[in-house]
Image (cartoon, rainbow, N blue to C red; front, side, top):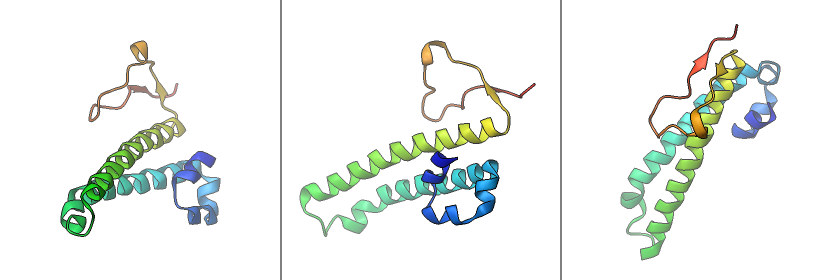
Length: 115
C-alpha cells in the first residue's frame, strides 16, 4: 500500500477509499502511471520543436536523455503497478526460467487464477 501511495500524487492519500481498498488504489495508480508514460513520450517527441531554438547545443541532448531515463523508470513502475494489481485480484505467477525478463512490448508473465 505505501509503495502504491508513493507512486501516485500525494493528494491521493486524502481519499480514505484508496487506503481502505488497495485494489482501487492499484487501479488509480495504473491509470496515473500510464498517463505519465504517455506524457513522457509526448514530451520526448515535442522537445526539439519546443526547446530546440531556446537551449544551448548540449541542452536539448540532455533534455532528451532525461526523457529517456524517466520513460524507462516509468515503464518499469507501470509494470510493477500492473503486477501488484493482478496479485491483489488473486492471480498467482509462474516463475520464468533463469529469471529472464520479457522483452519490451511482450506479454506480461503468465498468471494463473487463484485456487
